[in-house]
Amino acid sequence: MAEGLRIAVIGAGIVGTSCAFFLQRDGHRVTLVDPREPGTGTSFGNAGIISLGSLAPVLTPALLRKVPGLLRDPTSPLAIRWRYLPRLVPWLLRMVANARPGRVDALARAIAALIARADAAHDTVIQECGLGGLVRTGGWLKVAREKRTLLEAIATDRIYWERFGRRYVILERAELRELEPALAPDLEAGVLLPENRAVRDPCAYVQGIARAFFERGGTFLRARADGFAFAGNRIVTLATTAGKLPVDAVVLAAGAFSKRLAALGGVRPPLDTERGYHVMLPHPPATLSRPVYSFDHGFILAPMEGGIRITGGVELASPWAKPDYRRIRRLVPLAQRLLPGLSGEILSEWLGFRPTLPDSLPAIGPSPRTPNLFFAFGHQHIGLTLGPLTGRLIADLVAGRDPGLDLSPYSPARFL
Ligand SMILES: Cc1cc2nc3c(=O)[nH]c(=O)nc-3n(C[C@H](O)[C@H](O)[C@H](O)COP(=O)(O)OP(=O)(O)OC[C@H]3O[C@@H](n4cnc5c(N)ncnc54)[C@H](O)[C@@H]3O)c2cc1C
Image 1 (spheres, rainbow, N blue to C red):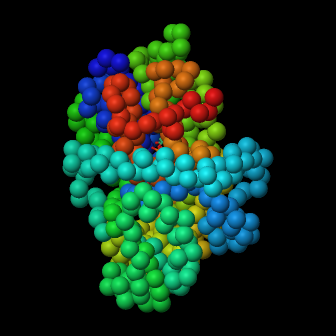
Image 2 (tube, rainbow, N blue to C red; image 1 turned 90 degrees about the vertical axis):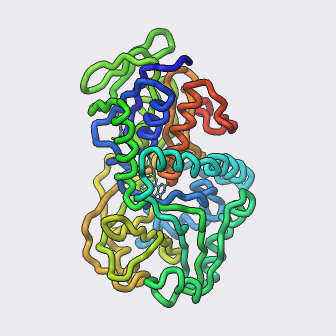
Image 3 (spheres, protein in one colour; image 1 turned 60 degrees about the horizontal axis):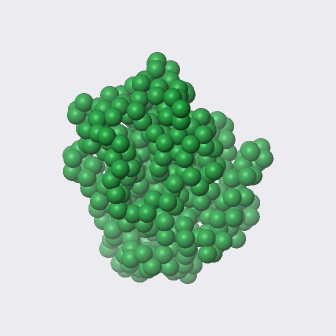
């Protein structure tokens, strides 16, 4: 396609805002469309980890074996609202079908190909948008009370870390004390993923990218995208709650809410959501200097600008179902044991919607039925990590440039 196109990007999360930023860099006239402020959807409340070690798909054979036990345990990181099960069954069955050993390897290879390029795309936005102050280095630490638990928990990840060249260091008790002295002394082992960086405020990070986009002349339309008008198989107008927008191309980056508009573009992606909660607590006097994951309880303690963020777990339920904060609140005393000095005062609570496709791969590319509609959604647990790279790849596709990797695993054509 020629340069200087009128492009509407639907959704101002980390993915859509990054798409708007990279498309504008190519000289396009971009309008970012969202009824909410940039960065206030799921991209607001994540754990902030640029997670270069998350190579395995969401469901692995090892995790599948644990699912019945996890569903029975009220403190486990997995919950399901049984009323939603009938709607979820087709998605779940496809998820399970993707958890075969050979298939999991192929999916991990496709995830690893994206992750290998994720850091460079973050570097571009960090440098060009002046976001260095929001990013901490020092890796991501995962800990366990017993070394045996840790070794068992990392068995699958470790295979992929080694296969795809990601660094990890196993730490003993004394090394853990030295690295994170504020943690409880009873931890026997940890694994540090030293390449990982973490964002101190994921919403501010998205808003920093959006600010740079606006300063360079990008437009924000505070509206919900509702539908498309076509000429032949191409979209010519985007209908929104604030009126019609003439367009040459549309990027659909509405996260977990992309399904309806994708269907209007001729393809029904099997998209569902893994809901996830957080609570914020004040920093203790001695706090963490990097995110810490507990293998014993399946939650993350992420040191953020405004306190310690406890995130963890997946709730399978309708995106429209009311939040149920009981399970995340139950983690507070466990977090206090992990980080002595942490008060139990909850500053805020939050629910977000991970957009997850059953093969754990995002949809990145043109709709096979509507060539000027580009899909950019389905980033499951690693949307912060892959958001800027997705923006870069969408800009390459729109420009007809070589993206530098085979994009066929992520193609929306797989949903036909
Ligand atoms: C608890 C938790 C912890 C996580 N931790 C991490 C982590 O540490 N690292 C990591 O990489 N990822 C993490 N993730 C995943 C990550 O947050 C998501 O993958 C990512 O935020 C998805 O970004 P997005 O831009 O696709 O969606 P969103 O941020 O949800 O943005 C979508 C936007 O689309 C808008 N929208 C919806 N419908 C329409 C419409 N019709 N018209 C216009 N706009 C519309 C919404 O208002 C929203 O602003 C975590 C997720 C959760 C829930």
